[in-house]
Image (cartoon, rainbow over all chains, first blue to last red; front, side, top):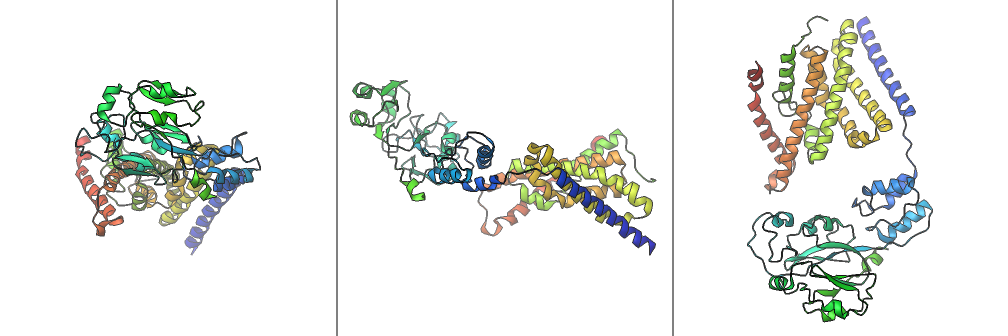
Length: 274
Length: 204
């Protein structure tokens, strides 16, 4: 009898000691969580894409609460809707978000260029790039194996006719595709209408022409004809200075290979969300 | 404290190596399978979990060994071992979590989510009880705990590799999900039978 009582008492004592220890510890070492954090975090979309420049949505939420002067319009995927909500929660003035979309600087589909090998390896641009600089004749262009489509959180990229296309209505501008493309073909641009050079080939014009009939052959016609001098050809590739460009579209008209086009930035999807 | 085994340096090395390879908790004793199957999906998660397990195994051994030999045994309460150990380990892990959250937030965010999972992990309890059953002294118990944790780490990392390969393969419909995982785990486990006898003969 005595043994049982002693056993019960000793286990109870151990339990109580542990309980008291935990209770004291949780009081003494309590970490204060800002009550605004869950509210702010709730506003953010949770894609953890890092487009805001912070480590995921949690990081941005912390920065918004703690950091002075952190802007509420940094969340590109969330666009104006999120910026409005954040401004409301934090009690600051709403600032418009410049929406961004991914742009693929290659239009070298199956009709204008061709493969230089019968690639049968792993279905990945990164893997194919290691093999003689890629599958296509042009080693700067899109290989169409879909690394960008695989990483896209919103299924905004489709593969058609051998190259990737971005559906600007679905694109949230997170830039994950840009970071995986081994040819660095994808750039993230503000979602406003503008002229685009849809080629990334920096080889000499004659070489480019043999590889792809859509490529920039560095004829400098655009450079000469641009009324505001916004286009320059550097490293055998036309480049547009968007600070000067007026979207007149003249370069697209004169380009012999039609590699300069007017970008189809819809921007419509933002309105759908609101 | 009669009957406690003291090991020399060679014995310690053999103990450590056999805890990792021969008596692997996951693959040979089939303990801690729940977390083994649950958290081994990604390498970084598997590593975080394993590090937390190593830490908790060593910590709970360091606490439960004195409790067994200075509190339970002298009063003839050895049969209360299981319940007391569970109580102490659970409280201890909670305390560690609170302390980490307060003082080392970086470590807490890396390890914190796994700590509550480990509270009820049978592998941790098994290490502490087996240390007593085998009558290891304190040093040997700690080495055994370290070895067991490292064994868990090895199993987790290996299996996360196996899983990443399995993900890209097509699985027959009937085997999809958990069944194929268990089959793969059993094959990995069988491969560990190859270590039986190697350690003793290597050092002995």
